[in-house]
Image 1 (cartoon, rainbow, N blue to C red):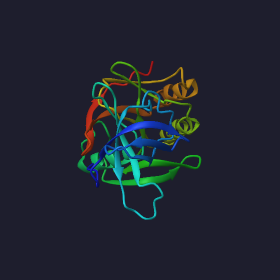
Image 2: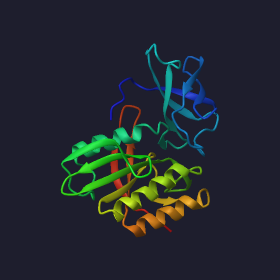
Image 3: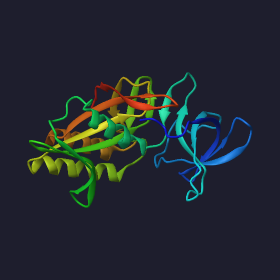
Image 4: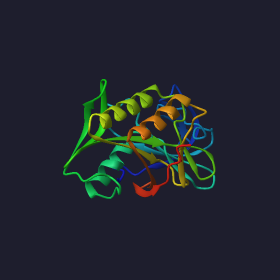
Amino acid sequence: MLFQTPLMPARLVRRYKRFLADVILPDGQQVTAHCPNPGSMMGLAEPGLKCWIEPNDDPRKKLKYGWRIVELPGGTMVIVDTMLANRIVAEALEARTIDGLPAFDTVRPEVRYGHSSRVDFLLEGPQRCFLEVKSVTLSRTSGVAEFPDSVTKRGTKHLHDLADVVRNGDQAVLLFLVARNDAALVRPAGDIDPEYAQALHDAHRSGVQIMAYDTCITPQQITLGNRLPVNLF
């Protein structure tokens, strides 16, 4: 996935009201950027961190910059924009580069299913497969990525719906897209959201396939990386 507009480096002043971030541009100007991340962004929003922001000249947008990536001390890159996850996975589905998925002929995004839910992708082939994508940014232990970074009732509901899909005879996959380039393992953050961790265990026992992939991140482009192990315990 190539960025349409080259990203600019900036320094974070503060993130506030969930979707706003004040940053300082290389010329010293302070601007407000859209922060497209509803999570807690634990460890990713400390003042002074290097940000990579995308400018735009769209007259319909109130804010002229969007925060896409944060660069941590030591060079770790983390995707801030959670909306990019589905774009990355969509490109990988088109290129057939995700190992472990059932055979499919067509891909349909944002299909209604379950209890008023929308699945990220419906793969249709010999069998239907419901594919849900979760963007993972949290890491509190070196090499370990965790999900979620805050309580997610919506995520828990998705797991229940995926389990129902399997019970009804279709296939279901939950794909953790690790939106950082320093992880070797994925696990649930059970201390942050024990209900989600339990629902993940239950979904796995019900037959929902759980998989994870990391990402290759630069200020120019982001692509799907390698498959990572998932530790459910």
